Length: 243
Length: 226
Image (cartoon, rainbow over the protein chains, first blue to last red):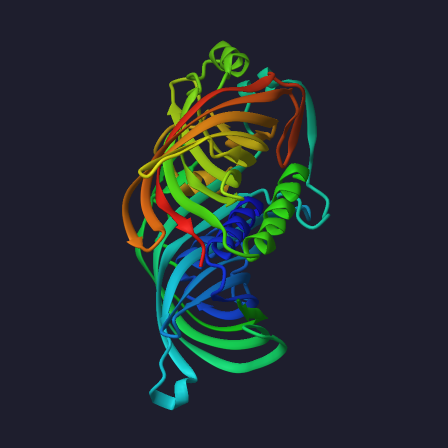
């Protein structure tokens, strides 16, 4: 995930470099997403884990490049993390970490005619991934269940039995409406100006294709039928400018 | 992680430079092959019944650069690789990335093409998953008994020297071109033997030495920045 974030920053920088003297904004966002986790939850229930039933709030970053006041091109990426637990006889806790992420490239039509240009429709395409890791690894300084140091790689290769990370990938299409809530100028210098922006996005993302479940290089059969279809409301806050 | 933060800071530092005056630059997507020296790892793998890891990895990524004063090239290159091998005694997959910043010089600039030697620094991350489970394992079996694999990674830093050739195909706006190119890089890496994962670290892992060629075909745009 760190890699994905860094890749995104590089693309952002590249776009900023190549598209100087254009309008460009950078926003951080969080969202309320309405997923259908029925497939996963039935799996968790059958194995004695609790369900994912609380609200999902992914966090992400979004870059927008406005072209000729006609369309804008967005690149966004976000991730979310959930954990489910079950208690074993004797009191020990088993844990599965679900980690998801999406990256989408979208285009928004900058509507000037209807509703005073406040609401702009957009469409995007991208990919997502879902990973189930068990046991869950350390995160944010929480202690690992165990951590071992081995003297040689041979002992690991002979018994590679420490964890499992099941993964699945998705091709995604996104439909959305973008609402400008705030566009506050903060700096005006000749042809250059910058502003603080607050946007609201309402949308629906759906899966048009997905891969098999995999464990490293291996195909895994009889996995739950999971998709990444969800509605969302997204709050984007950031900074933009025209050069 | 440290080298990647430095690279990001350098990249952001380039952005304001690009907005000062008339500049030239380019952006392209590429596909190519990167060649690694994984002899030590492959010795360990074959000794333990695993198939060898590929030393030639397909690489997909992007290349972005600015040309300052018509000659000096400042750029970044990102590449992603992956491969997998399934064997009788065990299987493994590798995914990784490389990230380089480079400085170059537009040595020959003709009407239809340009040649630029480069030198760069950066890093490579390689993450391996090893398992002795069978292909087609049942999902429920993995959830019931999850101790089926191990993931460990290594991240040596490296420098590269290279040569990039850009051929302009056509002009889509005055001063701006669609181009194809070929990049040939040779990377030299530090010896690295620190392997880490979520649950394990290896004290005397096989040394990985990132040294070898990468050859890429680049398709992109270049020209004067507006």
